[in-house]
Image (spheres, rainbow, N blue to C red):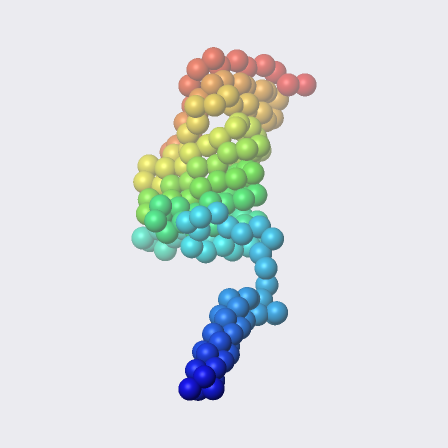
Length: 184
């Protein structure tokens, strides 16, 4: 009787050891698995490098295109967070407006874009706009900011606080504290 009891305990003990070994072996990532040095933040569904995106209107004309060093897609927020980006906006007449910024957000439901950090925009006429942030409203086709703005080009420099650029009518308005000087 003692012998049978000893054999049953030994079998149970060996089975327990085999189960523990199997669990430990399966819990480790495979040796060839790639470990992420900088895992994406919580909520990121997809992460991409060297991204190119184009917005085409209902008539088949390109309204704008965007290139970014990196992008992270947050599905629940309908938002793509962009790093080191360049955006090019196209007027109805085919004129281009180029913008660069350190970071941005593209909202996939509205197609609106917000950019910030060392924002520099260049117009087809040779003007340059510098500010801290800009917001692009796709429905209105306007670019706005409430930050300080410096506009330079040809032989003048203008500064102000706040701006509205209407891409449809190709008009730009500085909203307040506007100062202008001649550049030599």
